[in-house]
Image (cartoon, rainbow, N blue to C red):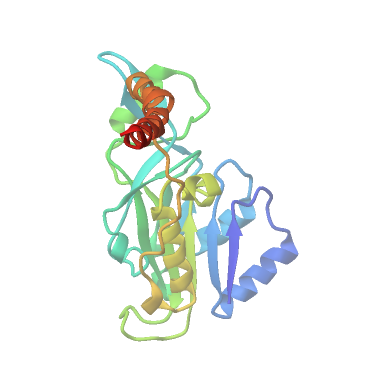
Amino acid sequence: KAVMIIGPQYDLSDREMKLLHDFWDKQGRILLLLDPAAKTPKLRGFVDELGIKANDDRLMVFLRTGIQELALTRDVQARFLSDSPITKRLADVRTLFLGGTSSLTLEPDRVRAANIRLEPLIQAEKGWFAEKDYNTDDQVKLQADAKQSNVPLTIGATVEKGGSADQRVQVNSSRLVVVSNATFVQDNAITQDQQGLDFISGSVNWLLSREQLIGIAPKVSKPLTFSLNEEALRRLRWIVLVFIPLVPALIGTMVWWQRRV
């Protein structure tokens, strides 16, 4: 069994946190997608106990829109890493995480004695920076902070307590997948990018110890669309209004002429 907590807007109660701890201690499996804007200190504390700190920041990037114009965006382009069985087949694939995303700090040394292993899954592309003062409009400060950022920023990771570091050895363990963005699984995001669906499918299979089923999910069906410019529309009007009616007229004329002859 697995518990899925997707973008919680409110923190869990003390009773719910106790149930979550008990579930984890009994080799529970948890998928946690955090909303950085939500105030969930108890959930964040639970993740922090396992060696992952959800930072109070937002990932941003300055994109050049002109010769001397820069635009600030909070949508994060990130890539999947190859070290985990979840993302092995998605290695170096890029996808877009819309909306707010915070960085995750992994502290494996702090939890190694408890037989807890951490593994990064997703990292932001080069150029994105983690801004702690994310509500400011001071462009000078933001650009200065962007220049100082040169470390990889993790936004998704796994936690495993117990088990074996050798993937070939199947041993029961507690497992957790945590991502600091919850909007990439919404309908509008999944229909645009297949990668998010593949990642969630792989995460669920890993949580349920079904590694052999991890793969690329079926493609999401999309309606076929095409666009026409003014010239194409003009030609289409000629075809519909002139040439198509002209064909039966020509056929009728030929039949009439043959009968006269």
